[in-house]
Image: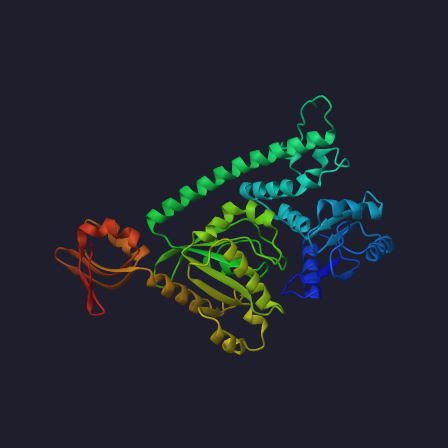
Amino acid sequence: MGVEIKGQRTAWRLEDSLAELERLADTAGLRVVGVLEQRLDRPNPATLIGSGKVAELVALRADTGAQVVVFDKELSPGQQRELERAIGDQAVKVLDRTALILDIFAQHARTREGALQVELAQYEYRLPRLTRAWTHLARQAGGAAARGGAAGVGLRGPGETQLEVDRREISRRIAHLKRELEDVRAHRAQYRRRRLEEAIPVIALVGYTNAGKSTLLNALSGADIYVADQLFATLDPTTRRLTLPGGREVLITDTVGFIQKLPTTLVAAFRATLEEITEADLLLHVVDITHDNVELQAAAVMQVLEDLHATEQPIVVALNKVDRLANPAEISAQLADLSNSVAISALTGWGLPELLARIEEILTEELVGVQVLLPYQRGDLLGLFHQRGVISRESHVPEGTRVTGKLPANLLPRYRPYLAPVFERDHVVDPE
């Protein structure tokens, strides 16, 4: 059920948003048997859509035998209840876009962190939607009760209804999940500190869902991440080590795909994962160049990045899936309009050397020029220079190995005892 409210600005056409909703339904394992649309001057507070369209929806549901009705807009708890009453069949579920995405995430979460984040988002979504019909929390918790979460409802206090008990138990479970995710967040922060000390640059893959991020990570790093032509085929973040053409090591992290109308509950629940984006040294924005709504998808990703305050880092745009074009050179005109853009095919490997070269070029710009004379017994520092820095000249003298190149600023303290001024572009870079 697609709804367009006049005056509510959106760049997406109703038909395009519904087409995406159908793909989401397919990913969730549903088969679409009917589609309805309505354009309104103002939403109906009780049911979102008008009374005539409600009657039409009920009739279509009966004719098709559909078991699920999915709205492309978020429904308030009251609107959801009124629509379920109008349908009059307790076996029929009324969902909105947020609930559908949450269901997909629940199916695709594989790690403990992913499961915790999805469960938290599910409970925060369901808490205001509890009704007297939800008398058995264990059945409604989407598997959480089976994991020992909310099944153990304690003794009921005097005068308490089952609904009140359920609300209290869900609130308790939400608080527990938030504590567990804070532990995850603290662990990630500690891991990032170690990474910072080792001066390993981090590249975060971002992009609209199904743009090809996982395929690109597999192609660049030799990882074996599940890939499918579905929205949100992969959910859990994956980090792999990658060696750039010049020999410098970096870490590359795949993150959850973005989507238009990304529920705020999901952004909040996935804060620990999304912090990988805010802490990255470079963002690699993967764009499906063949999609009809490529510009809108790219804009949706940039909006989420702005909401996360993650637009300060350098961004390289990988225009992916050029293998689907008759002539990949056709996008040269588009490249001219987009800074730091490289055309690639993650599937075939076309353009990947150019992409890695561009990434290396940008990361090198952040390094500090140095010249060091390393004693031969400090082979560890020479190896670290090769791994984390860029060497432009290396020679062997009786005192040790003389190296001229660039290093991350946070590694300079280790090399300070062996630093000497380096002449670069007609000026001296003082080691102090």
